Length: 497
Image (cartoon, rainbow, N blue to C red; front, top):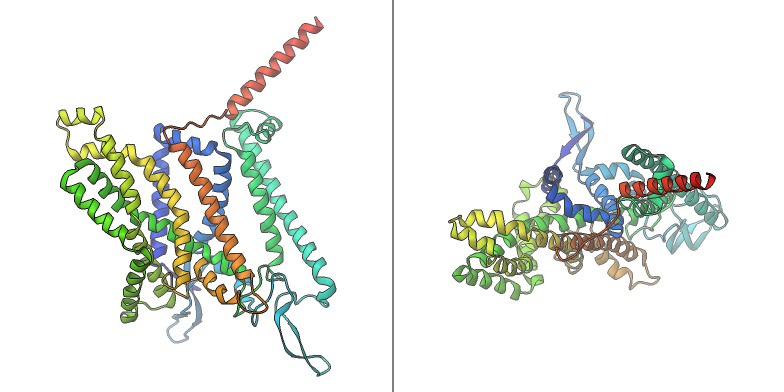
């Protein structure tokens, strides 16, 4: 094989999470009461636009989760392959121009020169103190001072045009599918989509896709000849670092939540349902845990874990495995220290639910505690769990950035938003100031967190029993259009008569 598959701990958990999500989706699709709330989420234009952006981030994260070790050479005697110690991902393979085109040091976004002056030797053999040309960025230009701007604009417009052509193809495909589904004409379904009268807000989704594809096409046309977001101190492409940081943010946000849920569900429901000494013990535990500064607790746990990794280095054969184990431990630590808030909310909700008449009736009929909890308590707190889970995702992504900034987060070899911000701390103080690393990390993290917040608002509005989302679906719109056309035709016939 030209490569050796590698499954890291976080990769296995992501695969398990993906399989669980598919199973739950199939289960929910077969139960109408579970589909009702998710249909309300689909009705939200802002929520679906945010979900479109989130799916782009998730796609990049999944591509970066398929790891392998490339082959170096094959021995002639045994025919066995010798694999590299470097662990790559499918995303690394697809983004080879970004990963391999390294410069000497800093270069500004879309520049053809280094950011600082140095001694260079001209073609005439003279030594001149000037900005040196980049090895890859703008290397195809003969005179960057006159050709750079025009070449960037031409490539950006052509790439954006290619992206919009793909978008037009998606519109045609969507219109054909919807017309076949509702058994109507292509023109009428397109009118319904662009009037915002469909059940799914396709107009908002298509506008979001147009922006993403146009920007993505422009960037794809530029990355083969320029460093779109510049390079860092060692010459790495900042756009590549920003895209690699997405996987770390997604892992922190998802795995930490999964680790937190069992503690919060079990202890919160138990405290509110059984009360008495059980409630006192659980309250004492989460009050004590909340009183300890989380940064100090996480720092102590990370240092202990780091000592374990260094003393058992023989168990981890690659640098990527050691960095991945530290990332997994960080998720576990964050999950153990962040369950107290949800536990407190579930305790209060369970205290209210256990006094409801149907639960009192179940006690009177001798129904077991386990059956009451699983059949009556748990289904009525699922909306709180889901809302809190989605809303905590953003805070966990920001928590990783803060922890990595202070040096107790992910491994320094792991690319993340926190390590990029930490590296840009000294770059902002130098002269001239290097600003694009911080700008790139902030922009990508803002897009991820903002889209997650907008989607969480849609989920909260849908699953909150005190709110309702009303929207006419496309079938009703098309039915009204039919009635309007019939009325119009009958009026015309009457006028002619």
